[in-house]
Length: 136
Length: 136
DNA sequence: TGATTATCCTATTAAATCTATAGGGTAATA
DNA sequence: TATTACCCTATAGATTTAATAGGATAATCA
Image 1 (cartoon, rainbow over the protein chains, first blue to last red):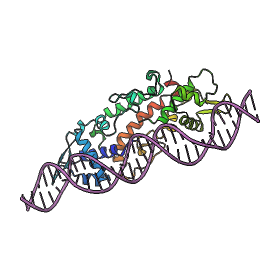
Image 2: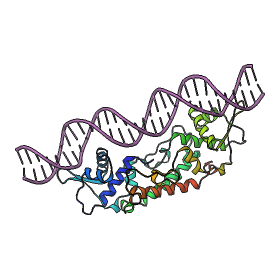
Image 3: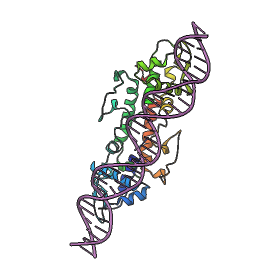
Image 4: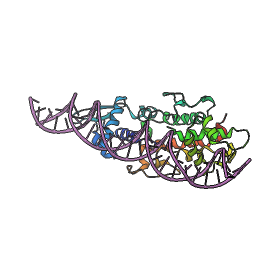
């Protein structure tokens, strides 16, 4: 299941990407337009800022804005920041690899074998999509 | 993240599939061999039985056994029973479709657009794998 | 300079889900 | 009829997710 955090984060990025000019947009407006709890969105946007996707401006006329062109923003990166590891089990994760403590040998593990394929196909989709690709 | 329920279920199915004969295997033995909490495994096997994957026999010499050949057991079916919907959001689910209450139009929704691709690629992997395919 | 605006930050709570355990019931076997 | 092993419900503990509260900080503008 996709977390609300990721869902809201993607919606916020999309919303910012469809703005005509590059003026900052207030959290309140994004929250209202996308039906998101403002406070929750606040923390999500902060995460996106800290990870280099967004810039912000305080005070009157302030808000958030994209730091890069939508076509330069890869879904692989966005998903890793918002949702965490792309792999469904740590033992097939590229960036967050961990050995399963209960599994004697992952090379003979059927779960590993299946989830490796899922990781690859999922990664292929994310690598093939930028923020620009999922807009209308 | 893959739930332990699914992980254990897949391991149990694999274990049963690699048995030489088709004699029933006790829960206790599967649990021991695969490092799974016996009581937890008990409920998982029950689920697999209720959904037509396993048969069981009570009393001495009893246990669980596969009802079908490994190559007849599709990962699509196993995953739906153990893990639930394959789609990451209900609005792109084939078998568990639900409209997002916060989303005005899913056809212009970027989350929908991305998750539709994920669903398709994930489904393709599961459809392409039977229990026999993930064994060693 | 001071009022206003809006982001920044930490802590906490509420809800949901997942994982595991407890304890006994039921059916089959020998 | 004793033993074995699955069957079933309820519940507790742990973890994660989602949301809220309350204020601190920085920028703007009159």
